View 1: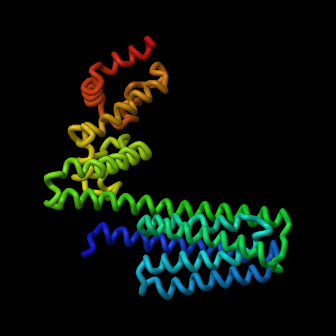
View 2: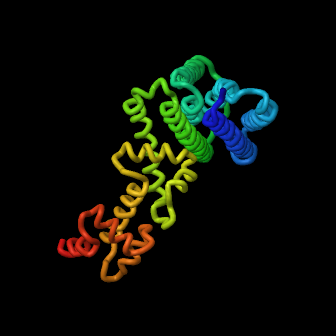
Length: 318
């Protein structure tokens, strides 16, 4: 039976396939137009527009009837073979056509087990070797392009591949996050692993805590005066109990203690970066997420063992 996390992963994979098809369609259309109007090459232009048509038409037909994995397996094989002609056509112009093959192993890493990363990496390598052998033993009447033409196509090619790789990495991060949460959930709920729960759950708790730290620091969520664990749960799309457990494994008594740690760090950083004679203490502690001075004073003393005024005095001395 599929869990909610499995369904979420499937949704992310389908979204990735959808956005990839849009991105790849735009890229093929742009290159088709380039080889039609800027770098005249009718054969290449028709080849690219043909690939665009097949990509869109095939996706519209199979997107609801085939599983994501079947679609991706098929696409990786067909796309690599499709690129073979482009690689041969540009072999004597630029080696940049190899760049089209770089996302293939990454796509395998996003969708499949590690063995498929190795298999498809080998498949890509064999394609390049085959291209080298064919160009060394056979001569083709492919057009030679000027350096300016190659510069244009190579630049767009590099930008396109950066966009493709960025898309793959973005969704891989989203999928990985759900996978981590699912493993934590399985470790927590499976009674068979309860005797060894502490030792087995630790790596997953560590990964979740790293995610929490990244979100807190990257988005500076602690600056929200009303921020709480429920808001963090909604932000990360993870049950608050898992967040709480992960934070406790790092030695924090509770979420509020963890939140205040970030706020005090922010206060200390602001005190170092600003001239306290030119800014008010109120500005400092409200900027860090404290609602009033009494709470700020109490938390600061609790965590730093000195009062804010004593801490400020020590900064001025140094």
